[in-house]
Image (cartoon, rainbow, N blue to C red):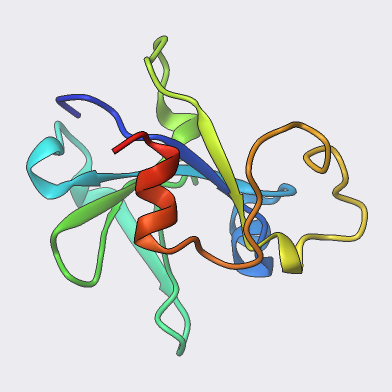
Length: 129
């Protein structure tokens, strides 16, 4: 990845919980021009639903990997893959309307919450743009 990293969001929807095996899925969206595969692209496997949800993972270790958006203009990048210190932060909890009933750790953390995905205008306001 190159360039300035965007803000991270944590998605609490049931599909993201299932794919991540956790209470939420932390990720960021970067422009296609900011991403380039170094190695291992041939080892990627994909899972998708009829609704268009897609998750890609490494067939060797099972880790989630970046995947391109349906528009081809951006990549979804799992934040857990960021192994070095980065200058970004979690800026929003999304799909909190479908969070697991046992998932209450985020409720009072002071980070903005959205019942579904925030509008582009709301997201830009979070990032100060």
